[in-house]
Image (cartoon, rainbow over all chains, first blue to last red; front, side, top):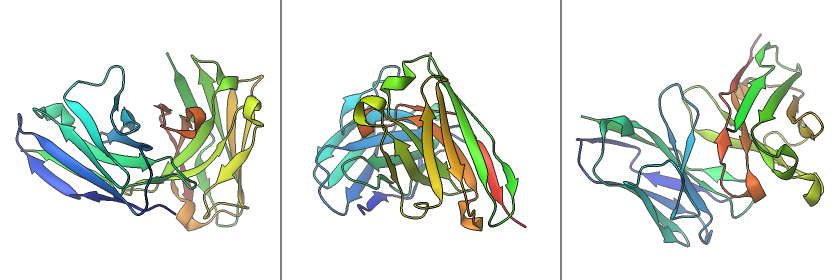
Length: 107
Length: 120
């Protein structure tokens, strides 16, 4: 199975900061890496697909980059509403797997 | 607007069975691959299994922990997705989400989830 390891597990940030979350795959997954946001007591929401492709309705401050085994989710100019857990997900091979999640706390 | 509404969750004893349902609307259900994803209380996301569209043979794939115990199926005439869960274990306790999973890539849409608790 492809293991996805996110870092950090937890980050406390202030509004307007730039945040970077990384996701490392245990083997190459090309660009088949997607990012989700899950707010408390809500279902996850797709933020970025295939490493860097934007999703309609998602604020432009969310962006993704990377390839192979190393990927990054960047949130520019963080807002209070971005407090959530963020997950990466690979669809290159079965079984599909998710990272353990990164919890963002807004100071 | 895409809507996915799960039902059928509840409390079941270890070794028991449960069938989850998902009513889909707002898109052409028959064309879309569908997956179940679960989340144990306070834990991360785990992909459970998927069913491809009729065009792709309605084939299914499963995660190792549920293979042989769970079955994903679909009824395109009713726009319904199902998850038959047998031989349930305490570690199957989780919120189960119905999701659209076009072509097996990104997971586009998620339902609100239905909670399954396996306990005596």
